[in-house]
Length: 442
Image 1 (cartoon, rainbow, N blue to C red):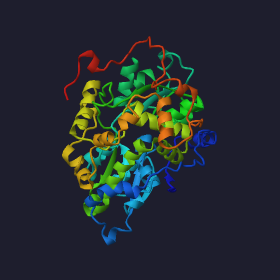
Image 2 (tube, rainbow, N blue to C red):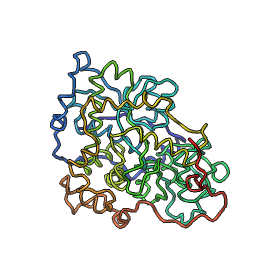
Image 3 (cartoon, rainbow, N blue to C red):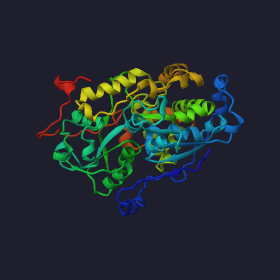
Image 4 (cartoon, helix red, strand yellow):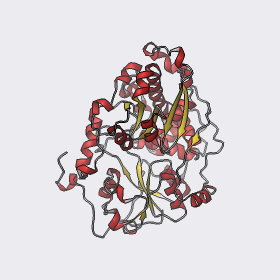
């Protein structure tokens, strides 16, 4: 069940980060994975009739898979740790790296989990990459500040881990619109460009005032007490019920040349991806432990992350996707007033989004899975963290007396994930066109 993964870290300020890394007290060293009843062969059995036999020449083929240092990519390691890849006859080598988009464009990696915009840019330049299934539909990008910040007046003007090229980032504009603060980075903030993990460490060390990130970094900051979440960006006009309006955020991709040359392997990889997503809903506590082990953090943080991704923010991890998600993603640019020259759009949606692979592997619709396994009954969207954790313990046979994951501030806040703060009183407030009646034409 264990797999040694290569950690490829691109660090800004190497000496600073190396010094701080030794102080990281959320490390998931020696995470002991809970034994749960899960037979990958049994999970695969209903789909065997759809799976073509792997040719003899491909049985030793090493599939190079990459994923970014972000919770949106957790299906990659769950496929490994559950034994799904092995049970499907796949020999997968997994690498955690921030260079997935480039590696897939060059063919060094043939399957990967990565941010949407980076893959689109490479695809538009001619990279042979397809999106064969959904993965992460939105949500889960956070604005985190020091816990002693009590007013947004104390946020504006401070050092932010975004450079000038992030001026029109939809998640940044969405956060500014939501909080009622200026969006002009060059005028109102001191910009700094670094990765999520480096930014988290800099905030802990007092060398950064604000940072934007995915998890586990926001949850680590909250667990250790050096940060709090002020806002969440959804990347689309997601409705309050968290069931409609989803766009596309981080994705699952396969090199098109590989898929054409090795369709038997590609079909099995897509199935493994979907079954790994299932596992997060079937065994949430176990999935949280796997996440914590791989990302080098505590099970407390892993549990909080799994709660956010599969419940508090909706069913954000989901393999079903269609053209409406792409339309919602593109319309979000209009709603936020992003100039057309600053937008990252797919030039050929039909060529990029090849969902025929979902049919080839025989996987059912995501909502069918949710209905048949009564996920909405067992863990309805919008549960409090305390109730969700009790459910996760019950499902995976964890003693309810366990103190793991039971931080007071999480247990007492119900389903609230954002901290209250006093409003901004200065000038330059960004108001999105969708609120000002000036929405741009797409």
